Length: 217
Image 1 (cartoon, one colour):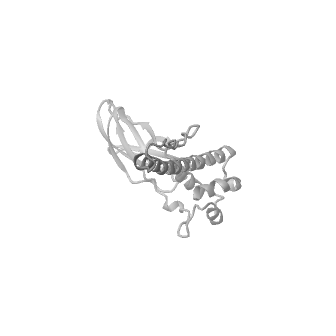
Image 2 (cartoon, helix red, strand yellow; image 1 turned 60 degrees about the vertical axis):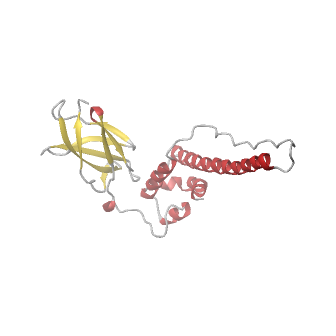
Image 3 (cartoon, rainbow, N blue to C red; image 1 turned 90 degrees about the horizontal axis):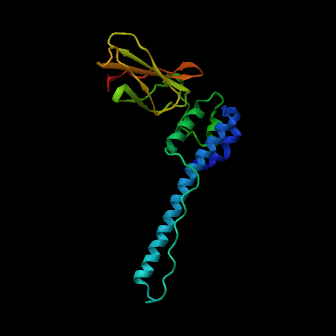
């Protein structure tokens, strides 16, 4: 299983990849979350099969009137707090590792992060692919991957004006507030985004997204 292999080996590559001890521990904990969810589910499946056998013994057992066996017990829920969206978190971690300056194909093969047909993207190929959703009061909800970069800068433009910075996000999903040029008015705003890596623009600007904003809610 890829996750188990990754968990066993990530500490050995952490320094080269620029992962701090805290980030390495978080990566291991993420793997533990995924393995725990998988193991508990498989254990429940096995218990459900045993439950079916137990039911059939009670309903159709030949020893009529004999004391029925004790019902199988399902495994207890895992202790501690498991986070949701573990697969998306792992993909984000994988993208960050692949984009790290110290990454190479040998590390990718050892961690099983690269297939033979894959390679890290050149910056010229990197384009943000984000989704913007407007909620009441001019709040813009942003979803999409950071593709292993440090942050994304979102720029806005109303009418024929110039693009100006609207927000920086270091995590997705995230949100930011967008106000209209005229308070209380309904306005169409163009948005675009570019990734940030090591405090510099990285890759290309995204396509332009148009949203309609009513900052009065």
